[in-house]
Image 1 (cartoon, one colour):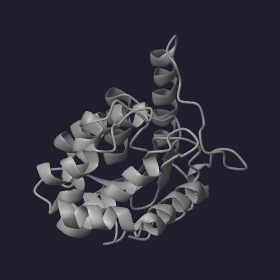
Image 2 (spheres, one colour):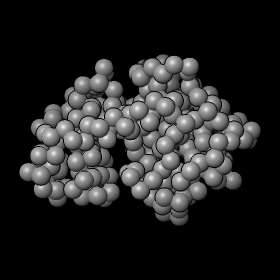
Image 3 (cartoon, helix red, strand yellow):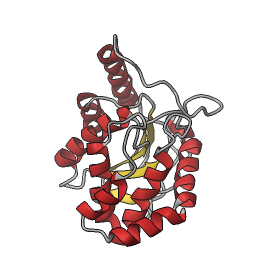
Length: 233
């Protein structure tokens, strides 16, 4: 999929702005997700987002030709990503079945905060190498389910998860210890930086004519639903 470089439409811009205001109110008095991967120049506008096209090399949940494709850059040890993962699961249940929404996951580990995250991202890729897209999503769902976040996951859990979802644990461990997936993880991280990620989770909504960055991290379900409904109209 090759998204066109067009500016965000005014109605959608209003909805996105409203969602961000609602998020600010929602988060008042709560800790916020501070930028964790500085990028020169600040957050991009819709027309400035430079993101690698979604392809068969991506980890895609839902129809690749969906009306809206949400590309998420995520860190498995980020507590906001854990929360947002649940939000996206709920959105996919509502919008994924009819081809309205697809979810693409790209790793964006931030070792300065979460030294375990890069290896965990490699684990996701080792699961995918052995079991394809299905194993990738099963493994990813499980790691977000059990991690306490903030670099507190016991790394001994990584092969246990592999066994729990039916993978060959020996082959998984060989893949993980080899470090051969590090380059793939770095490529996803570099793509996130180029797309404007300054922290996690960072998402870009892609439609036929628009690329819309969601720069405020883990927007609540209600705000994301409002944005998606506006785009579908």
